[in-house]
Amino acid sequence: MAVVAGDKREYEIYGSDNEGDLCLYPRDVSQATFAQLTNYRSQIIYNENYDAFPYATKIGNSIVGIFSTGAAHAQSDKQVMFRSDDNGLTFTTRDFLVNATGFYDTSLINDLLADGESVDLKVFNLKKTGATISVTSTPLVDGYAVWSRPKVAGTKLYRTGYKLVGAVNESALLESSDNGLTWVFKSKIGVLAGKSLNETDIVNTGGNNWLAIMREDTGLYDNMYQSKSTDNGVTWSTPTVLDFKLINGRQPNLTKLSDGSIILGTGDRTGISGYAGSAGDVVYGVDTTGITIFRSTDGGTTWSFRTRISPIYSTDGGQPYVVDLGSGNVFITWYARKTTKGKPSINSCTMNTTNI
Image (cartoon, rainbow, N blue to C red; front, side, top):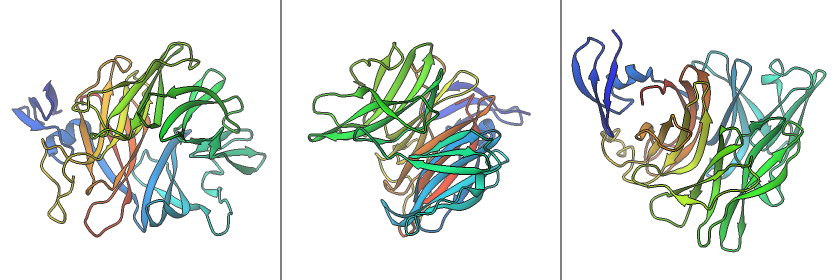
């Protein structure tokens, strides 16, 4: 018998379990009934060094991504590529770029790209011509650090970047007319006096309407700001802060699913540690650090309650990337440290978001 979600509350759900009994079960993927409701499954993709900053997308029916690995935070030695052909159940990894050699190994996805096709992975554009895949790296556009995953807008692609202007950051919309090979500045998104708006993601909410959600670094609670465009990114509304008690975090990721809903993923680094040292996970219902997602069915006007899909130890983790698998199902990857002495690993899950 299927688990049923009746009244969806902030920390728990009132419904029935898989035996049909009425019950109150926590909004927590580590709890069996909620895990059954969402069909939550988790996998570790990579755990060797300080593994961080994953990025994921889909090529055909395969999930493909890259991440950094090295000795410590922001000290990567190489970029590693991963691939899953079974919707995130198993993975193959291969070194994509070793810094010391500068050599790109694209063999893991050679069979996924047809002649003339390309894909963006972080700042890298991989384009296949004949039997060869060439790699073009574009880390900066007009001084803006390239950041988010590209989104399709007619015949063009949009993504975001940010740069330091004086003492604070501002974010911008970048545009590509050649499938991500080159990018140009289009407009400023996040500019607000005294606020440092950097990591930004965007999602189309219908027609020429776009929603942007931004990380802000001067506040105390990992505040996030939003801005909207009604003219396909030419102009943006003045950024406004979201209620941190409902939505906060860093490294926002916005994904519009095929069912029309939007998933927002964030790395929440406020509250007490998501992992209590070596004693295990903190119980649900407590403000803890971790990877969180939210769901909107009205174009980002309102959002579901916070669902933490993974704790992180202290503040060492984040950057969730969501990939649509159809029918409300998603694949999500992120990085997280789980113990006081360990280093972050690249983690993932699959789940159904319909009932969160």
